[in-house]
Image (cartoon, rainbow, N blue to C red; front, side):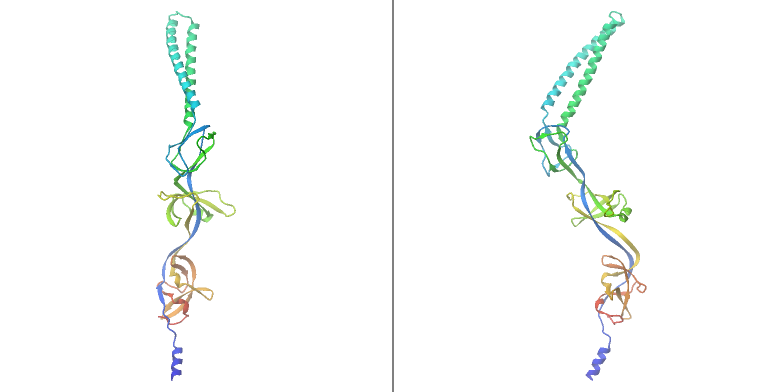
Length: 334
């Protein structure tokens, strides 16, 4: 009797407990991540236009400088003396010119009355003209000296941080020598090297999300640079980071995720529903309390969803998501 009961139990189909979810239809987009570099758009290697001994320095490395701030001064004592001399000469010539103009007017009246000779009149005329030209020359010389004087004081052309300091107090500064590297940290650019297929779809002024130090920021596409890498067949895409209070450093890694492909109106199942059996991607669905195994083709992944195609799979089918690893086709499930 016991042996017959055991044979009867073994003959009954094994009942497996499973968890199911409904098959849905929707769209799925595949993406690919690319890494790039962060750089500052505005950098200036500040240099001197004049030579001389450095008498004062008002900046240091890592210091924030506002636009127009005086950075350093170069000795201008000789130039100052020349400027005083030129100003004095201008006054002297101005007085002489005023006297010459008065004399010329008097001789102009006398010439009309024929009281003086034409030769004497011409002497006063050309004397006045000579003084006028000399005054113009001195004024031009003073203007040039003033420009040179202004160049003895170097100002910051824009606001930013001093990244590098190349001079010290008391040092002789030659014309053209770099004094500092000034960086504007408010204008941050991003360069990503992309395959041509991605470059073709990049649209100017479009806003994209980028990741820096595990934080998401927004950046605007400036455009593609039409000079690629022949070895990697990639092309630079330039973006401008939108304003943020966060601080960055030159050369930081930036990651951008771009759309690779899009599948619309496809069947969607949970990731756990798809398993590999006998070298094929399959899913189990429940039909009349029995598990049916269906082959599927994976179209793409997005989050916890998988886009698949199958002739036999339909929307609202109950697809098994838990317990599918231990069941077999036509097995009774609960």
